[in-house]
Length: 621
Image (cartoon, rainbow, N blue to C red; front, top):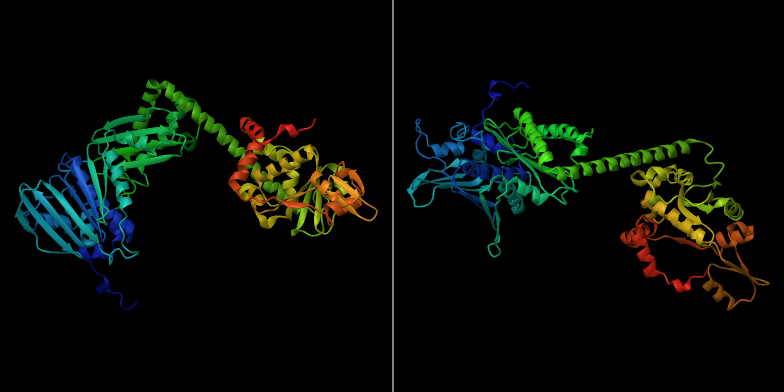
């Protein structure tokens, strides 16, 4: 601390400040910072087009991360200034030197701080500028921030500026330097929508044997952008409006779609990924105006469901939150963009009233769906809470559940059909690790009812509460009271139906439980074959036929679980003849599609499946 004195205070030269603190100028010392360099270079060329000079920009990427940009604008001025310094070198190396501080020279352009191109030049391992103006060409070379002598020659080339640079790995040192060609094309594609009449030629020459060329050009501007990115539009005609307030020019375009909300905010043709005041003004007024037009009180998020929109503002002296210009700050843009969207909606609702009615219908349906979804979320949360409360009680479903002595992965909950089946199974089960719970009547079909209605069903509540693991995305296997759930029903049509309904319930509420292989079918025998010294059980007629080939005895048709003796139950359901079949999902997509087909609401699909897969000749009345 004793060494902290006046001599501790240092002043970095601009060159050193850029190279040592590049994040202050380009946002970061990684490849994102290098992309910002590219934005700065191309933006200057776009600014020339904005001022009415040049209609094409040629961009090239070469091996070794060498980037080149050529425009056909006026060219950066060069020559001696009044103070004796060279104008071009000043524009490329001296802080706050440039031609954009004077509003008469540039208006509504991207770069206004005079820093961007200098940050590029000084942070490159090699940077060059070739400028043609009025039959002369000025050439500047800068290596690692040090400028070489500039020279001027005669030329017959068109006026314009060519910038070429290689990012310096010593400056951008957070990761290996790599310029991604796709990132460049994405930027140029966006810019093309905002510069009607300006062509972008983008060349990838990294592999000279397989060069790639892409051209971006838009006639319709931001309406083209809306059309290109919108998925399944709700209305055919995009909403478009231009609004001029003094020197500020606002363009907005939007369209409701069945996709997700997607916003693009541009200021002086630069994409502001964080939005800013223009986005705030748009959204606030959109909500207020739409609610007034449709006579509802919907949230802003609901109104923007599926909305694809573009906000493009041209403004003198744009103010940004940072050097990378990701967010615009001009406070006046809130009111101006708000007025633009209000006028756009008013005009569209009157001129295209049939299409506006489609928007209203769409938003009304989405609101109903969201209300249903909220009810479902509340139902899930209430179900989980009720389960947690039930777990805390000492007496747990005492009137319905015949619990086992031990819980965990080695225990099994058997769900059976009615009290008589419960009584029969209770006499034969191993009480240590098999719990029993009856359901009364057919359980609700979870695929044909809303989730809140499903969770109100008593049988559903009993099953979910007894398992104790939560449902859907709140499912936690470590909270399971039983490692398996087995369905035990009579071997008849009603029993099979109940089994399908419980399987559907588990699929709908506990899909992970299903995928973990925890669901089983505890099959009940159809026949008992008894001889003088042996007893066997058959679970279908084919098995019966095989048994009687080798065993003579009395055949008894078992009518159901409720009529089985304790000994029969013990032997056939929990003993040596037990048929406990695990539901294994080999193809999740196919399995779930079949459950949806057979148990869901699509009657036509189910009818088609039945007629294609069932032989009605085998049916007996």
